[in-house]
Length: 319
Length: 269
Image 1 (tube, each protein chain N blue to C red):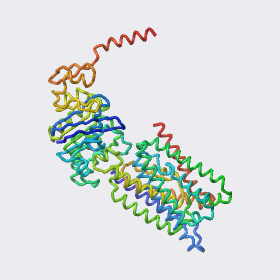
Image 2: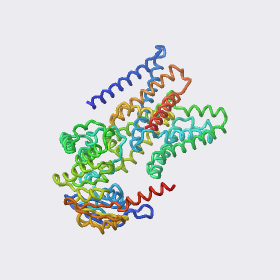
Image 3: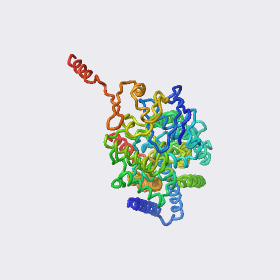
Image 4: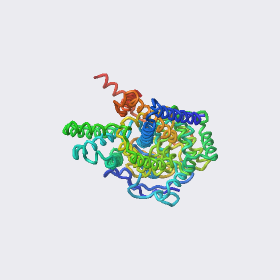
C-alpha cells in the first residue's frame, strides 16, 4: 500500500515534469521562427535536465553521508569557490583571456579546481572534524565568506567594464550553454548515475550510519570515499556548465523528503531529480516569459530556496 | 569461539584499552561490566571490527576478523550499538528487513520475508510493524533493533548497553528475550551492561574491565564476589543471596546521615 503510494507519487511527478516541459517548449511559439525557437528551447531543457539531475543526485548522496538535511555541497562553500575562480581569471588574465572567453578552457579549468576543492573539503575536513555537522557547517560558511571576500576585493580593483563581463559568468544561466560541453557533461553524468544506481541499496544501508552499515557488511570507509568523489564530480560539472545555483539542492531534496517520507534512495533519487527539473523549468519560464530575461534564474531559485532554508532552520530550532 | 588476543587502543598517548585478552564461550551470555571509562564499549567495538585496534588480534573460529570479507562476517556476528536515534523515516518492518541485507543485498526474497515475519513475531512487534520507528517508545524501539539482529541471524550477537534508558519492566523483558535466544537458538550473546544485578542474574559469564584492562574474567559466581567487586568499583558492596541470585547491595549506609547533614547545612545558610 505504502509502496503503491510512492509509485503513484513518482508517476504524478513524471507527468508534471512532462507537462511543464511541453508547456515551456510550446508557450507563445512563433511559427515564423519555429526552427530557431524549438531547438533553442530544446537545448535549454536538455541542460536543465542535466544540471537538475546532477544537483539532485549529488545532494541526496551527500546528505545521506553527512546524515543531515540542511548541509549541501553548495552551502559548504563550493559556489563561492566558483565565483573566486572566475574572478581570479578576470583579475589575473583579463576579460579577453581565453580562460574566460573560451567556453572549453573555462569549463575544464573550473571543473578541475572545483573537484580539487571539493575533494579537499570532504576528505580532509571530514576526518578533521570527525564529521561533526555543526563544525562542518561553520567551516563551510567561513570558507564561503573567505572566498567571497577575496572575490569582492578583486572585483573592486578591476575596471567596471570587466566587472560587467565577469558578472555574466557568475549567475547561473541556461541561455547560452555550449553544446559540446553539454554532451560531455551528459556523458559524465550518465557514467556516475550508472555507478550509483548499480548499488543503490547500499545507500539505504549507509543511512544507518557507520556502525550500522559495517554491521551489515558494507565496507563503509571505502564506499563513502567513492561516493564523495562522485558527488564532487557531479557538483563540479554542473557548476562549471551553467554556474552556481546555491539553494537548488537544498530546496528539492527537502521537498522530496517531505513528499516521500522514506529512506529508500531509489525513490529519493528519482523523486528529487524530477522535482529539480520541474523547479528549474518553472524558474526558466518565469525568467523568460514573465521577466523577459531581465533577471537570472539563480536569483529566483535562490529566493525561493533561501526562504525555505530559513524556514527549515526555524523549524529545526523549535524542535 | 571468539578469542581476543592482547588488543590495545590508543587515543593519542592514552591507552584506553590495554592488552585485553579474553575468550568468549559459545552458547552463553557474557556480560562486560566495569566502571565508566573502563573501555567496555571500546573493547566491544574492536571485537566487532567497528574500530581498528592498535595491536593484538581478534580471532573468530581461529580466523582474524580483519582478513575476512565484510559480507561473510555480517552473517556471523552482529553488533547493536547504544540506541543511536535515527533521523530516518523508516518503519519497524523496513528496519528489520535491513537485517537481511548481508544475504540479499536489498532484494528481498520470499525466504527473507518469512524470516522477517518470524523476527517480528519473536519480538511481538506485529502491531507496530508499519509504524515509523521515531513514533515508538524506547522499549519498543529497542525491541525493533533486536528484531533486526534476529533477522540478521548471526551466531554471535553483540549489544552495547541494550538496557540504556529502559525501565525495569522493559529491561527484564529484553534480558528474558536474550536468554530465550541463547536457550532456543543457541546464540552467543555478549552485552555491555551497567546494572551489576542484571549482569549477575541473567549472564553466564562476566568479564570485568577496569582502566582498560581485564580485572577478572570467569563465570558469574567467580566474579560476583564482595572483595573483587569492591576493588573494581572502589566502593563498599555487600552481596546477598536472594531467591537463588547473588544480589549486590551497594547503597551507602550513611545515606540518611548525609542527607541530614545537607539539610542542616542548608538551614544554617
